Length: 278
Ligand SMILES: NC(=O)c1ccc[n+]([C@@H]2O[C@H](COP(=O)([O-])OP(=O)(O)OC[C@H]3O[C@@H](n4cnc5c(N)ncnc54)[C@H](O)[C@@H]3O)[C@@H](O)[C@H]2O)c1
Image 1: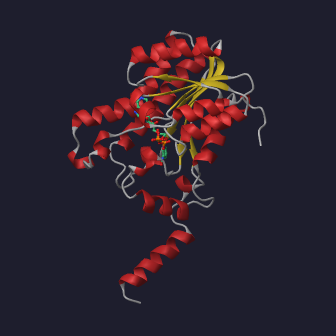
Image 2: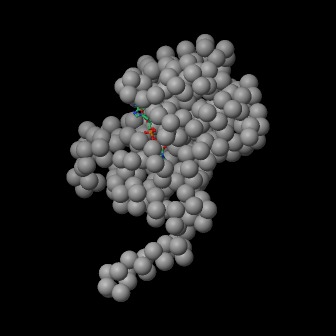
Image 3: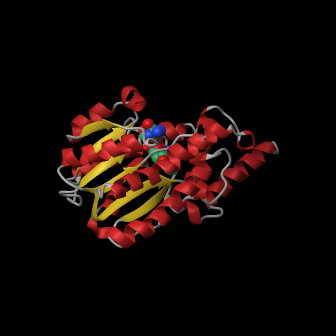
């Protein structure tokens, strides 16, 4: 059910690769809610993914850009304002990648060139997008910028590797830039800390199946899906959340406040009994 929450708003959505992507779901919801927007991803992702289908469905244009490249971001933001006919009201940063994770290198054996790439792609890109927009005065007053994070920024989860550091940096950038952009332009900047979700990036996380099951058992409301996350993003882009800024907002069915749940304890008991041969 649509509420016209984004009627007349213009956006840029980073990170839709295929229909499992959280950004894909956000684009579909934003379209339903009356927004117009530009879709963007790396040239490689555009070739490999299915973004043209999403563009057709949502009446959007696709502009290739590597979010680590400031010159490409400048081109993207300028072109987006031309295409959409004015300043941008909302931006979704839905970008993450760790070459160390991809290559199976553990946290105590990182490749530092890869580590820098992880930070650049997954966190500094957020700073670069904000900086470019600010220089071009590209975001409207009371505009809203959201990036997607994960609880590994605060707590250690086995196998999340250098992405945990990237998420901690991402959340810090939201606070630091949130102050400056809020003070000067009334623009709000937040991160959403989402449940583990089965997407292309998610499937790269070590033991994702077990992690999904564990999170689900631990969360009183169960894991939040990509669609749930998209709904939450829409509220943050809407005028109903104008005074929310510089926050890391947990969207995880309650996981981040739990220590142990009955459902997780039951499963633990079961495997404990199996170990003892009961
Ligand atoms: N899936 C999960 O379990 C989960 C949980 C919490 C947070 N997140 C975060 O959600 C965001 C979206 O991930 P997803 O799960 O939808 O997976 P996804 O693989 O669909 O999306 C990741 C996107 O990042 C893009 N990307 C990579 N390098 C880029 C670059 N240099 N420039 C521009 N784009 C680039 C990819 O092309 C891809 O579209 C990421 O920040 C991820 O860390 C995911």
